[in-house]
Image 1: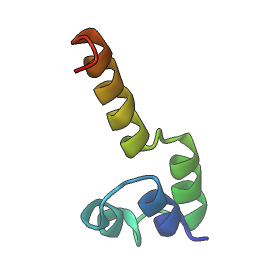
Image 2: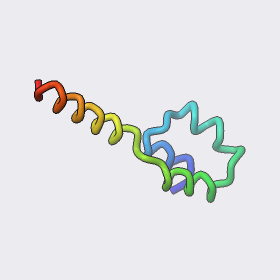
Image 3: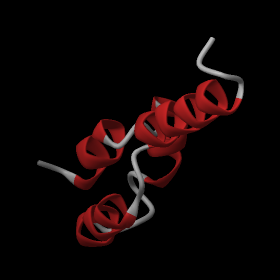
Length: 57
């Protein structure tokens, strides 16, 4: 897996990935992807918290 592919799996969009793809080494992109919190997971956690706080509706 390339660093760019790893970032895409983490939820970064193609526009942001293409901006760094040829400017940052593959190794560093993989490191950044490994340190990233998956955006989709964070979004779902936030939705779940809001749902709980609003009484589950």
